[in-house]
Image (cartoon, rainbow over all chains, first blue to last red; front, side, top):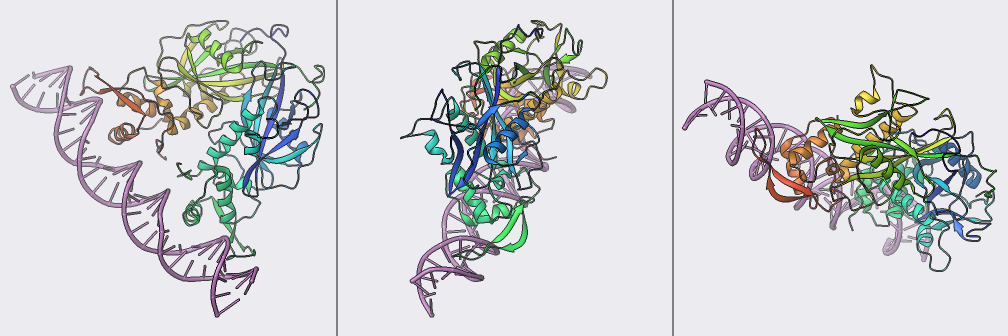
Length: 255
Length: 255
DNA sequence: ATCATAGTCGTCTGCCTGACGATAAACAGC
DNA sequence: GCTGTTTATCGTCAGGCAGACGACTATGAT
């Protein structure tokens, strides 16, 4: 490395941006906030903010998440995207992991900003509260954010970041039990299946899905209870099991 | 986001660190440089350096790689670790992708440094040239770097970064054709198998491996030539095919 | 009572993998 | 030249798992 003369290297601002995903009404949705100031004033963006001096990157992401949604984050063990095991069996608190870092020189017109994006997977939440300096917040289907036909596209390079986060979520529920992070503490096999269907955008065979998830050791543990719902046979309730890596993985249908 | 008053957010230095992996003598090795200055003076570290004002993160990583090894990088399409396709069928130039970002407040004792680590997979190279400010460079088996019994451990949090990079490489050769990045332009099935064996640290059945890789469409294309080697039947030569994602994946043996 | 809805259990077939035998084509030493 | 050794390549077989899909169950709605 070069000498650490502070004048020798350019000043950077470091932020965290959040891709917060949830499943609402059978659709994969992301949290978007309306920008209250220039540039991109009035446009939608991902929530985020500056990293403070005394906190690490994951702490900064968790703090921004709490400020923006009130969610308590359940940090993944590492930044290693390959699936480092971590204690995210618990379903209270959302899953948080580092996604990637974006640092093109011109990604922010005002100064050089390097943003460490994080991915959050959360169960369906009540309406987001507009916290901090955002003049509004909403859950939006990702298609609306990625291919906006009426509104403006996401600010900065946030469309790219969102797309990367969605792709990460899509591939990660294949070989990990992370799909349960989209579910409440207790859930049915059908609810879990609808999570996979929403995230992947496909229809899955209920019978084969049931066989697969109940047959994978450590994925689901029955709580003993059953649902009482309107229309249809009551379903068994499950909690997320201790397994984090699914082997063999769930297979995403080809076409 | 908060207002962009430059005095409102703390100053960060942003660096790139490189996990450069290769396979030498049937062992997975990483590039290490000896630190010429304090702190950790004389200890081994990962190569890296500051990001410049006019370059993005991938360019900074490619520049450091060239300075340190003379390698030309073949950048992956995205930072998306899930396997965004990219044109790394060509074997000239090493594969480069973003790994993860490390920004604990005390990871560098002098100031707040956020390091965007990158992963490079390269074929076996001649002796590294000690470029820049490093007073020495070498290829070291990763076990020597991660569990040093005689020498000091890697500087900073580089052991953690290296471990994350190795884990990324191990998992990524399962479901992508990236193992060919460790091979020269033309290679045999046996050489590719020895790459898998070195990276995973296991022994694979030559017959099943041969059936698997030659049967996966787009993975390997025969060049027509054969090797003349000492001892053993000559083997067919292959180039890396266009496929980047292997479906179904290579299976890493369980235990 | 009947229908619609959703959950759960089985069956069957094809594909892939792991284990492993057999053959092929080079080299080394006698 | 013959034999043993090494590496590459082809085949065979059994087990496991996934996709397709039939059948049955348990609730609410009409």
